Image (cartoon, rainbow, N blue to C red; front, side, top):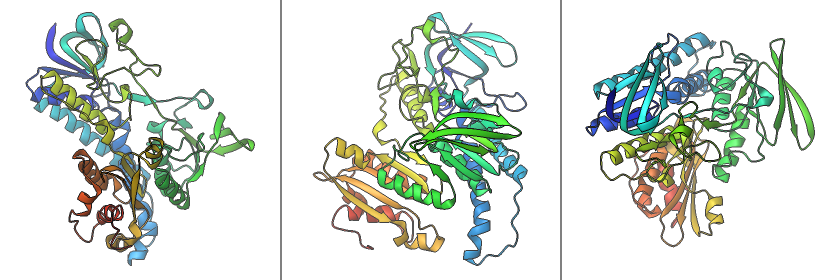
Length: 471
């Protein structure tokens, strides 16, 4: 039986990063993952690279280009005539992006001398891990340390049972072979809004049914309200307070029944996407036999350094509590590797950025206004619209704003919320400032290049103090 210093179960953004960092720190490391491609070849990268973050962003970008060619180019004086959609080519491009990146991960594991095993892992006694290979083989390996990074899977709901043709999850919605004339989506969260944006841009009539009465409750209320208005203007039919009570497929259509405060309603769509969230995935790992504690939602319980109740066994990413974000998993993977290597490690979960890749994008870090008020924290507000930014005017991307909250007593930045083009990139400045306990004045006194979208952050920081210049 081969022995290692560390065995990592899962090769998603948490697992493969943890494995690479362990190897960089001189630890003999094995990484086990069951993902395979269409040809049944190993495809490391987890949900994120295979059927999540990466393919969805590829389609979001492609569909955005298609939409711009139809609606934005003429405003720039670019007339290209009739615009036609080649969906097969668009999907092929998406698949190529995925293939390139999963191969890249495999290459990184080899480069760092991580032994990669393709198969399903089960944890046994004495930290022995059994691997049922995707090629039918079986193998046992052992390590003093085990990192569980098995991620999450879509939540299924009995009232809309998936058939992978008419009723699908996010994976199925990335591979429609034709644009649905009418597309129903259950859930107005990150996945539902992003997939809805893709197919709406490509010509589908999209109806989003959300059971909650509030739109994007995790985001700042001011940002969520404006985002909802913009997305509805783009054509997304977002219906809040609508609980789906049934879905039945017949004659290549899906009949959906839902209820709201006005009673029960029916809706007929060509395809239905179930995007009601994800659950931690630890099926078949043997956690009970290994004595590893789970919480009431099936997530592995860990402490601040991702340690389970069993010595030498760690868990990171979606399989634990907290936001299901790839970058959270990656940073936890690095921290665990450094902990195992005897180094000091720290993860500040309070400044992990969130992003929704609609257009405009939605990104935030830190506290919302509602959270600050609930905690009784006095704060100053700095808000600035992109419509007043020269670069935004020049590019035609004027929707949205930056909203900054700073402590009324210390001026320390407590939260930054962005609705706008490239918000996913802009939020990094706020994360950096907050990581160093920066004040709004620090951002206000930092020179920002002109003309850039980032000037909106500068102006919002000024507005939290003595006042913005361009408002």
